[in-house]
Length: 464
Image (tube, rainbow, N blue to C red; front, side, top):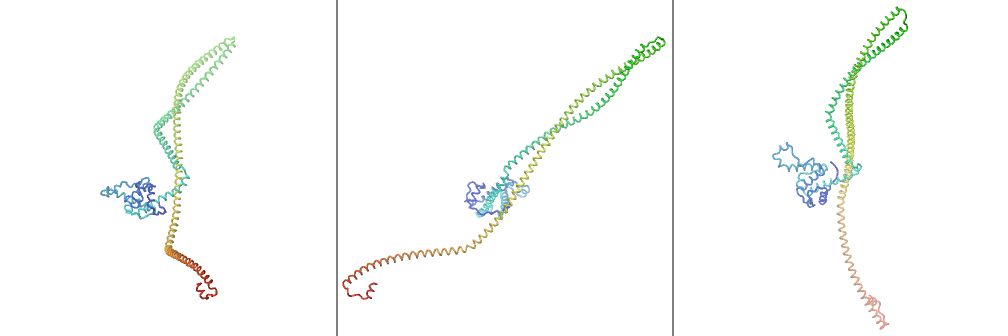
C-alpha cells in the first residue's frame, strides 16, 4: 500500500466533519472541542473503526481473536491481559498501516495518551489518505465504466456454472444409481449373447440336418421318377407284345415266360416303390417333426432376438445418456474456458489498474517532489524576504510617521496662514480706512494752503 502523498495538518473542525462523513466517529456528537481536548479513548476508537471499515472490511484479522495454546501457556492469568493484548494488536496494525503510508514514529503513547498536536497529525494523515483514495477511485471510474455490469455478468456466469455443476452432480448421481441396473442389464445381455451363440450353433446343425434330409428326399424322388419311367416303359412293351402275338406256341410260351419275368420284375419294382414311398412318408414325417422343432426354435430365436433388440435399445439409450453427459461435460468445459477467459480479463484489468496505480503513484511522487522543491524554494525565498520585509515595514512606519508630522505641520501652517491672512485683511481694511481719512485730510489741507507745498521727505514719511 506504499504511496506518495502529503498529509498536511487539518483543522479540528475539518477533522470532525470528515470523521462524521466517513463514519469513523466513535460517537454521534463528536465536536472539534473533543479533538482539541482529546480523551484517551478517542484515538483507539477512531483507529479501530478505520481498520474495520477501510483496511480490513472482511474482518479477517480480528483484534479480539483467541490466543493459541502456546501463548496461553506462557501467561499465568490470560484474562488479565486481554485488554492489553487487544491494545498491542491495535497498535501493531495501526503502526503497520501508518508506516505503509509513510507516516513513521507512531508509538504506544500516541495511541493511549496523545497530545492534541500529535492527535491532529495522526487523524490528518488518516483523513488525507481517505481523500487520496477517493481521488484515485474517481480517476479509475472511467476504466470501470468501460466494462459495465461486469459484476452482474460474473454473477450470472457463476450462477450458470453452479447450475451446470448441480446438473452434472445430479446426472452423476443418477448414473451411479443406475449402475446396478446397467450391470444387471449387461450381465443379462452377455448371457443372452451366449444363448444366442448356442442357438446359432444349434440352428446351423439343424440346417445341416435339413440339407441332408433334402438331399435324401431328392434322391428318393429321383428313384420314384425312375421307377415310374420303367413302369411306363414296361407297359409300352407289354402293349407291343400284345400286338405282336404270333401263332407259334413256342414263341408264345417264350413271350409268356418273358411276361411273367417282367411281371415279377414289375412286382418287385412295385414293392421297391412302396418301400420307397413308405420311406418317403417316414422322411416326410421326420421333416414335419424337424420343421415343428425348427419353428419352435425359430420362435425362441425370435424371442431372443427381441430381447437382444431390447438390450441394444438399452445400450443405445445408455450410449445416448453417455453422449449427453459428454456434451454436458463439453459445455461445462466451454463454460470453464469462458470463466478462465473472464478470470484472465479480470486479471488483465487488475494488472492494468495496478499499472495505472503505479503510473499514478509515480506521477504523484514526481509532483510531490516538485511541490516539495517548490515549497523549499518558496520557504527559502520567504526567509530571504523576511529582513527586506522588516526594512520595508520600518521605512513604511517612518514614512507614515513623517506623513503624520507633515500633515500636522501642514495643518499648523494652514492655520497660521489663515490667521496671518485674517490679520492682513484687518490691516488692509484699517489701511484703507486710514487712507480714506488721510486723503480727505489732504484735500482739506490743500484747500486751506494751496501755495505752501510739503517737503518731499515729509510726504514720503506720510506715504509710508
